[in-house]
Amino acid sequence: MPPPTDAARAVRKLRGASITSLDGGKSASGGGSSAGGLVIGTANFTENQILGHLYAEALRAEGVKATVKPNLGSREIVVPALRSGDIDLLPEYQGSLLPHLDDSAKATEGGDLQNALTAALPNGIEALPYAAAENKDVFVVTRETAEKRGLRSMTDLTKYDGELVFGGPAEDKKRVVGLVGLKDEYGVTFREFKALDTAGPLVKGALKKGQIDVGNLFSTDADIEENGWVALADPKSLIPAQHIVPLVRSGKNDLLVRRALARLGSVLTTDELARLDALVDKDKKDPDRVAAAWAAEHGLTKK
Image (cartoon, rainbow, N blue to C red; front, side, top):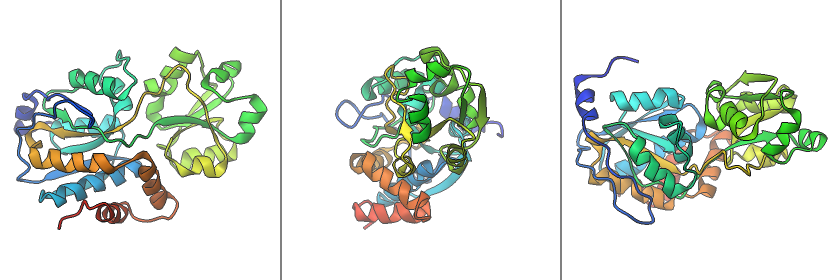
């Protein structure tokens, strides 16, 4: 990653404003300008790419120029890109973002997470009102594995401490919502960790072939139900709420941006998000076209 520009350093001096949900409270303070347009970055998985294109459609409907840089990488890459000014806007997930910023944070519910994010966000970055849509990480086993080993909950994994193989993105090895949290909250370790992809074909293929016992997928993934896989229950709430939350650089956060993303967040539901994911993953449609069609269907395109 190139060093921050002088402009990016100046933006960092601004303090991020308060964060709030759509169901009440004060909106982000803004004070920036979208006149030059926004560059939207996305992480390296389908849903985040779709969200990036949805953000672009919503912004264009308000007359804001928007371009998308998709598939940049994991959170460990895209958040620093936002901080440095390489991108201006990023779709994020409350419960995964907070421990990335503050590994001592304990909030698990939507409103509490937003309040905690207020204190944890770096200077120059603001989080806008979060959407109703939510997509949680889930730890999944095949139906066969669940029946053979009696697995219905993460607590059940303790019966096989040190025996099973876990598969997910490389970052899971050090994430709280990953091996760290499974060990700390449930006392579970694994015989082996296989670094694969982010809820993609590598994890799913490894599950099907029996190369891993437990895989990290997302709750909106249609493949879970289609394959009869079992998402393990989480009685200790290791995995917090994961409402979609836009992160924006303070220098770009004006009324047009806030209004555009609030409109999108108010109509984007978890079910709709799952449907969009399936159109790309299952029907092999392009994320930008799927986003454009959905935005037009919901009155979010430029008139």
